[in-house]
Length: 198
Length: 263
Image (tube, rainbow over all chains, first blue to last red; front, top):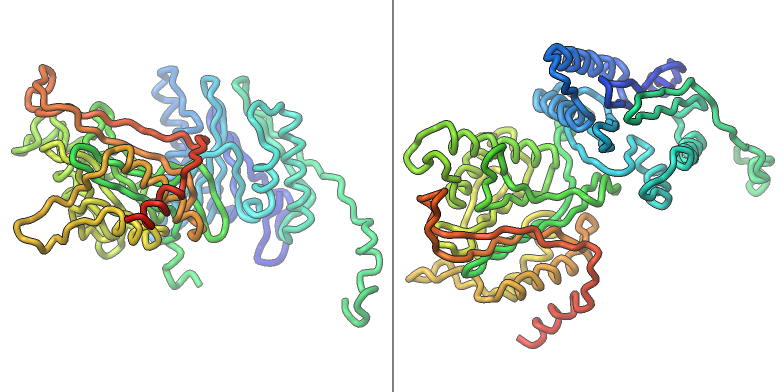
């Protein structure tokens, strides 16, 4: 939930997961103001979709494709939206998860991540993801990844939201913290092995 | 610094290979999408069917590697142009209900690429399929549209590793000879598919962006025939995707080294 400003932690309450329409969740990292503009683009898209009033609604695949085109076309104008986006959802029983980068690189996979998550979380997810995970197992895996990122990513804070989307609907949790442990012996007297260091 | 402008491109890696035979064409591309030293996904197909809503351009497929954003944009661009030229315009050659032939699509791709000569599509393409006589054809491109019809080709990060092997195995006659000799290979389809599998295995050893199990797209010319639905169509062809990434091939790599040693 952090919004950094260079190397300072400026905002500690940024909601970076939003629901789009009935079938999609969108998570963003990068520039918060550009994310807000993306939400405005999507607002317009969803409103126009609803105005057709034809019983059809845009699903996660469509939103992903639309966002890919938006990001790519802004990159073509040398005026990018500085975000990495995660798009996920369920429509008609079919689940979908994809990612879009700031220059329009996009893909669909069973697990995705942005930024440092690609280095720290994806390997954990590759090892432990399997088909037909239960929701509790998935949350456990995600929290494991978030904990690693909390320990090792300088721009992370101990305040998270987890969102769930099913055929029935969307729930985005209240912000919560993970339990961390810093009592490792190696941290107790950090300069023990090397006098004069800090 | 953002002033430099090289942030608009990235190389997502990958390799494509195509081999043309006397009545077939094999196109293969690996499935890894990378960025820097990371892997985005292990399951991204770089082969595109150039299909539109009603009529897939099933006489040829496009295999591309390079920057994935541009790859996708190029594929959509070509599919839209194909749709327009087949359905909406009545230019001589492109009658209603007749798809574009492979050589026509080849020129279209070249022109599409050159159109963006001063802000290129960072894609390295191979177009593979069957020509109007049912012979396999492979067209190879650079990023700005210069192209050539060849008997076999490979593009992408593993291209430089694979090309010498294909040159050794497929021994194409020089394009300078007169009268012009056929560039297509006399190998059978299964031999060509085995060669492609082996060649990917070799590239994977040394290229971090390439992975061993490619997706294949296979065109087979079947017969000259009359068709009621498409009266202008002169031959039938089948195209199919053949890949089973989990299939264990015990001879992979060994066949190739055997062929090289015993030439």
